[in-house]
Image (cartoon, rainbow, N blue to C red; front, side, top):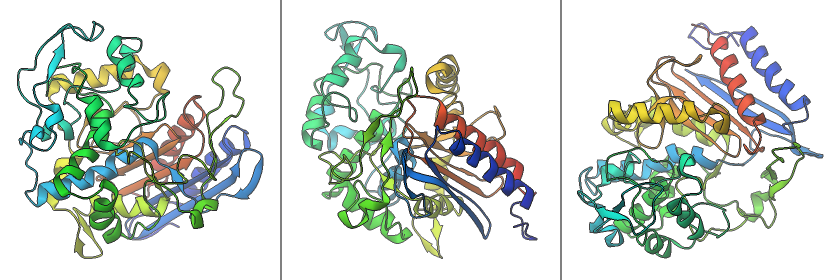
Length: 409
């Protein structure tokens, strides 16, 4: 598939396929679907089967649980509202989310929940969109009272308590102190779920209906949503969470009658989407095109630039970088990018084959989606093996290593 208008080399594409096949043939990854696109070229590989014990083959139209790769896509809802001046970056969120007025902040992140001081200022839209509003999933604080309260209140996906519907979720969130002062530190995940509640309050629509109307519909993302309808459920593989000690495969979520077989009580912007490689390709190509899709404008060029460039201060970026590097044994190497835009990691240093400026994210269900403005490249690789073990993370790493070798400069 070598092309005169710039694409991929035949040798490089063979290497991509060989490395993906090797992971599947190892027995640790039942199946994988991968897409790389550049210019007018798109190359797709579908290897292996839908289930660990065989069954139907993976296909280009296989639907995957996108997990945290939902974050870059659901952020588009907020971008639409910024473009339309229905949200401003420094608006106070308490206008729509009064549950988050008059915040208190822990004196120490590992301290008791009643050892607090008043927040120095209210939470703004900017704080939510940059994941700096003060609460998040912090793997360095596991076992602390605040992390215990977050989990016990069902504020994160699929932990002991199911997530309640959005208004109740926000009510529970409002009973907790913040970990850090608003705008002070980057904190993972919870801001992306809060985004969906904010969008629903501003628009008067459900988060999913607004995304479908303003993003999924215009981009032709017909297989993207927060659940898989019955007529498509045979395209959704089982999701596995292998045992961390033995590697034995355990089903974490079945397709029929599983978590994604019906609309959820809480449509989670942080990790709730299902989608396909082609739907995600349409979204990331739109971002690379400065907000255009098929000649129609979905987002403005300035808001795309806002989303896809590092929004953190040098101090915040350094803290995020340290968090990733010091916990590589828990993240299996994912998350080492340096910066963060709106909903996406943004590479601020060259730590591997990918250049500075590449943006996107990875998901705990074994997914990875990035775009690279320097090469005009989109890469997507999707598996059904959760990151309770390092196998899907290693496949993702090897995919990107070979993708960059395949680029025909």
